[in-house]
Image (cartoon, rainbow, N blue to C red):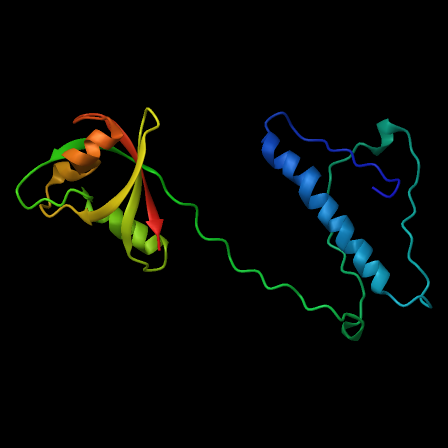
Amino acid sequence: MNSLYLATVSSRAANPEIVKSLTHVLVPTVVRLVDQVASLLPENQPSQAVQIEEKPIEETVQPIQLVEEKPQVEPEHITEPQPQFEPLPPKTPINQFMVEKLSGMLVPVDTVRIDGEIIAKWTELYDGKEIKTVNIEALDGKKTTCKVKAIKESKSNAKGVIQIPERILQTLQTEKGKLVMVKPIVE
């Protein structure tokens, strides 16, 4: 960038995705911001160029220390509004459940039942927003979206179990005893 080169050194244990994000996203963004701030400085101020001293590679290998430098910019020179960023929503949890067949005369055909504690954790994770629907995915890739309610009976063996009506079992092409992945949908 601007006739400068960036070399990245990391340990073998470093996550390659994070290293790639740093070198392809974070560093170019910081460089662009520094260029923008530099262009906002008045031209009558002397520029503060960074001097690079050339040394053999053996002498320059040292532990990296991050130093935060704040550019000296007067607020009246900035005319663009600063972007307002909202915090990212929490990562949607995906839970794995064992399938139980739900049957009966008054059982809704479009509603599954999950342990109430799991639904409470999802609600807490999303700041009290009520979880009314979920995405269900069978291990073979079949997916469906349906309503969700808490299991009425507070049995200790209800943990890790999802009760699914026959129609949804047919849609997912799964059966009792199989595993499914469940992800809440926040409305």
